[in-house]
Length: 415
Image 1: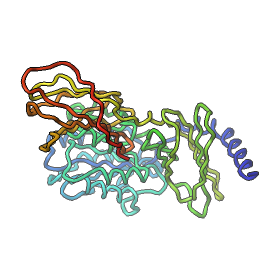
Image 2: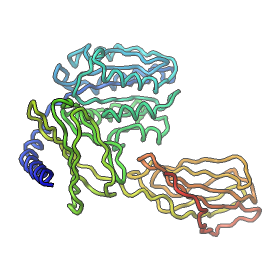
Image 3: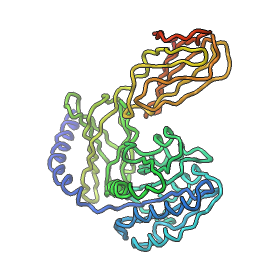
């Protein structure tokens, strides 16, 4: 008990002494990191589109500081097989990187993005590709939105390793899939833009990439209502020291929590936190070799994951009906809704995707005088889902606009 009291006092004193100097010096730090551009170079992209994307990437790197102790860049093509245009250690100046981007040729072939992402993970952490130990890793994926293979699992592996993922889609693609693939928050890491308007987002995206490459940056991902993941670049080894993580709620109503981790740790998931709450997080590297500064970040947990509680069927016609539900959850807590509808006595199912913030949709192409089972599922950013089901019946003849407030069928939420 006395040991932990002493440790708590020592940590609090160190935080008080170090916080102001770290906060003032953070903005002055020069960006340093390995930046990998993943370009869709397949046959699904026209030669004109590829040339515009190439110009855009050149704009992004034009004002970045390249050098041995600054930014290193690599370019990988997405095609039938991934192809490295240049490695991280191949060019040491911004002009050389721009020249290499300018002469990059389209590879054509299939759009095997999942395969290219697995390859990109190897490149980002391989010394043979010029990757460096202990610097931030950033992936910028420019795509037309389509892929011949799954991107979710390999992208999650990258984020689990602390890679910051930016996605630029030139207009086509699955919104929910891209929202899940990009780092959070989506408004900073995911951009939908026409290929001729890419230059508009270049300054903002460049600033975001630069922010992600600040040295010794504590990063947050997978924010949920009850927790979040923290990741950081390696600063210690298992023999040179250990880390202490501290999380403090801004309202001070809950106790400060601390966790000691070995020196080879690079991530940690906090759980059992309060929803919709601001937390101050500190990472304290305790090294027996040299003095390392603490790192700080502020995180706000999402609102509690409450799924739909009521379904209302209205505007019932022989071949259509309207489905509404409450409450309507916004993009801060949910990725959207899946609406599934099928005849109660068996038959083909219809599935509709509804974006976050909306709470109604009209289903067409139904059979007159038929009872259907309607299921509304809220998909949350944590990967969990909450579902509610109810019965609905199409009109057999005359139209009706009288809403039917439907009590949901018993269906346990998915874990």
